Image (cartoon, rainbow, N blue to C red):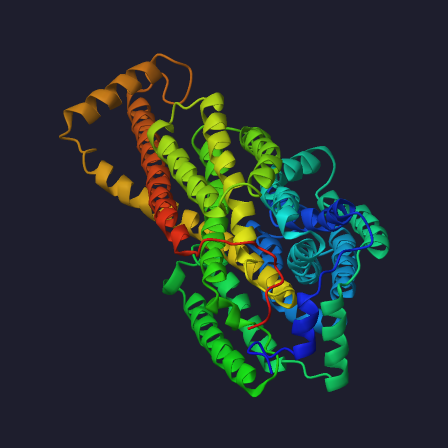
Length: 547
């Protein structure tokens, strides 16, 4: 019995060279289609929430469940996808996920009430959760190791560019058509993906043999493991998404879900190790963390997701709340970053075959830290569109140097029979990192704004000459105008005080944004030396024997 609990014949199959019948790049394009739409759906609905709430007669807070429900279901299926593949085959599992995603997308668009929309968003998230890991595993098996970096470049376009263009596309569709079309557009893509997958994609021998071996042993599903996984990651996603809104542990509901999350995940680890010791396949392959390359890459992908989603939330929110940009203009200011990633990914895919991936990752995190330093130094209440656009372009360039090399080292010295496990856990790291990053921005922005406002308001007292001079100056201007406070001294003073407070509020918010950027810069800088814990990659054949 192998240490991973897999049959010896499966491990042997993993060592055999295999090449698909069709052109690998056609296969890559095929599986990227649905994955792109799935990743897009994690952000495309955000800007449409007010329209969804209005159209279905719900409040804004109730409508946020449209986002939360999708993320919860997604987080549950991501780590379970590799396990489910070993019972029904990867191609069949991928196609089932596409069908579920396509049908549920159509039903979301047709939903007459908010509860029904939330139900189908749950189903959509479950279907979408299996697409990313399956695609990544398909690419890892389809391409030779020397081409794997270029293949991951195509995958990287989907998972990095889609969140960047999602808000812009969602806003454009909502403004020009109807919010229901943000779901309907998935249907033709799902149909095309199914047709192409049927013709192009095939299961490699090690998958076929593992499925056959599991059939001979009988259906021995890890129901307890799946239950603990669903409770653990579902609760974690709920806590991260609703924590700031409900004041974190000041809320008994958030506290209860946090306890359920901790107990479930600890229980899942203990249960998985015990099941592995018995010789049964657990729902999570925790033995992967014995590989230093995978353990470090898991951490790096978490930080990558954290940084990507945090900045994707941070910049549009900053330009809309403090600079007065519209939703469409906010999307446009970060769109050049998406274009930069699209241009850089193929270049990085070529470089990965010639350079040590550790050098590229170190450069990527150093450039990301530098871009955050530039943001901290140059972002202010007077920043122009061009200023912010170029800062985002520098940041986007750094992300291109991270995604491909990190995913490449994740598969180093891993047998092909465990490619699905690597894909599932890697996608989980990035997605949970994204959720933590989003929650971090929301929490820090609220609390640091309050803190800075508290510090600054101490100087706004009747005894402050500067404060009185400012109020009188604004009041004098307002009295001579036809706007609020015009003609009446008392009203002018009141309006002037409100004007000064708004200025103070904006300054406090600006300082809070800079605090967040500073923390992100420190966080990413720490990753530069961490990369060198990874052993020097040798020839990444991807067919290392099971151990």
